[in-house]
Image (tube, rainbow, N blue to C red):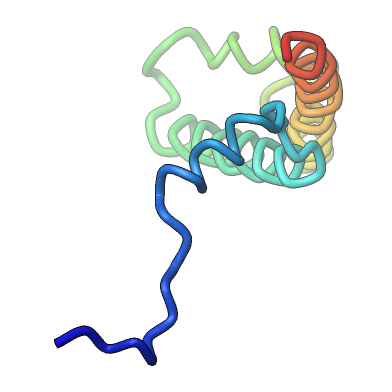
Length: 108
């Protein structure tokens, strides 16, 4: 027996077709927040590893490559690295996200 009182949902095929007609885009604000938090957590983890194992590696020279004014390790430098990590996340999100959205819109 067929229950005619139930509402029918849109088919998955129509949902996919409607999504495909819209160009893909990156929500830049969400992307910026995500990258900034990711870079900040990664930075703090790297500093923690340095404090626990100072003789391992090359003094975390990679940090000074991505964080221009960063020097190991004082409180001022630590907070500067946190700020630079946040700024780097937003820089990547604004530049990459905007470029991606422009090229995605043109591709359709």
